[in-house]
Amino acid sequence: METHTAHRNPTSVVGRSSFRLRSPSLNSLRLRRIFDIFDKNHDNIISEDELEQALGLLGLQADLSDLKSMVHPYVQPGNHGLRYEDFEALHRSLDNVFFGAVDGDGDDESDLSEAFKVFDEDGDGYISARELQIVLAKLGLQEGREIGSVEMMISSVDQNQDGRVDFFEFKNMMRSVSVPMY
Image (tube, rainbow, N blue to C red; front, side):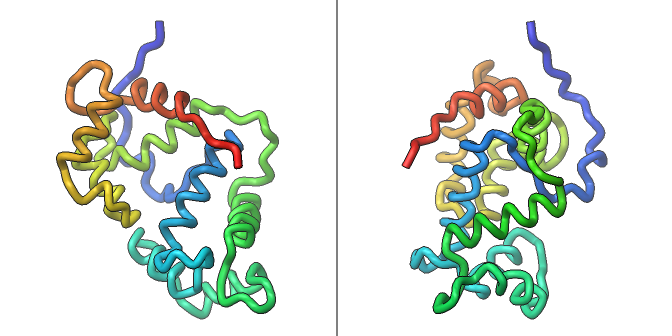
């Protein structure tokens, strides 16, 4: 029987602003969602301004000239920004710089734990409706505007009906995600 310990040191995640899912299908789905969120005008291109705005909303302030110099090598001639394929190449490059090359044999439990920590803002071992709403709002997702909708999201995953999502429930939800193939 699997158990979950809800205690952890809230300061242990300080300074960690990113996580990587080693499951290629989940990582691809997550990256596509991020691209679509950053692409505010829905032209299938993320401009440098859109990228700067999105990073700012996430609390990641970037100097526009630094951002341009980092993004420019990935922008195809004739384009005014990053297409999804360019964004994916930039992500892959940054992923390799910060995490090393992906070897395909990842520790899924560790990846899911890192993903869980993104939502568990207060570090108490649970994702509350309010915490989920905060993260959805940071990402500019419409689903996060109404607390009632967020509470419904929580209840759809909350197996023990305590009004919040623990790591075990989160893990079950993430492992049941089906990713459509295009």
